[in-house]
Length: 285
Image 1 (cartoon, rainbow, N blue to C red):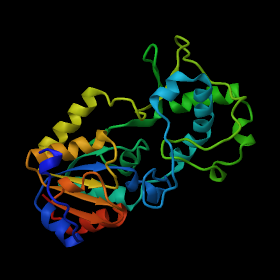
Image 2 (image 1 turned 135 degrees about the vertical axis):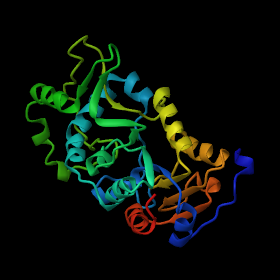
Image 3 (image 1 turned 90 degrees about the horizontal axis):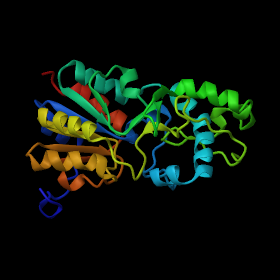
Image 4 (image 1 turned 45 degrees about the vertical axis):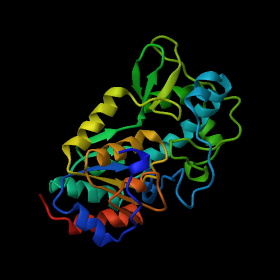
C-alpha cells in the first residue's frame, strides 16, 4: 500500500479499538508517549516544548559537541535509571501473559518495558544503559562509564545541581549550559570514540534489528501503535508494512500521527489509560 492508496483517517472510540483488536494476536509498537507517565518527557507530544534532537552527524563531526553531549548525558542518564514502569507498561505485561500481545517493538531506550516484566521486546533505537566504541566495537555498561567520568570530572554532577533540578530529555540527556571544562572518556581498549548504544537522528537502525521487528509484525494478526507520533521512518515503516500485508492497524496517541492514514481506527488518548482499558477488556487467547 502506498501513501496514495492509504485508508482515510478514521477517528474512533475505545469500543472501536476493542472491536478491531479482539481475538487478534498483537504486535505492539510503542513510543515516547508510553513513558511520559513515568516522568520521561516526549519530544513531539502536543504539550512538549520545541526541541532540536542531536544528530549522528553532529556527534561525529564536532569534538566540542561530543563534550557537551557527554556532560549533559552524565547527569541525565541517572534520571532514567530512577524511573519506574507505569500502568501502561504493566498493562502490556498482562496482555502478553494472557497471549494477546506476542511482542513489543519500542522506540524508547529507557528499558521500562523490561523493568515491568515484558519478555519479548525489540529495542529498536537501542538502550540507554550501554555504551559502544565506534572504533573497535567494544560494549560497556553505562554504569561503568559513569564511574570513569566521575573520576575524570570530580564534583561535576554536584556542581550542576540535583538531577531533579535539571531539565531531562527523552534521550537521557540533561540540559546544562556550562560544559567546556568537562573531560570526555575514550575507549579503554583502543582509545576510540565512545557513543551511547542509541540510534541517533540521521543514523540507521541495524538491519538485523529491523528484520526481527518485521518478523514480529508478520507473526501477529494486527499491529497496535501506542504513544508514538510515527514522525520518523524507523517506526512508520512497520505501520506501512502491516497495512500493506492486510493486517489491521490501530493507533493510540495524543494528537495526530503520520500513520493515521494507514489505520483501521485511531484513538486520540493517553497510552496508559487506553492500555489499561485494553488489558481489562480484550479476551485472553
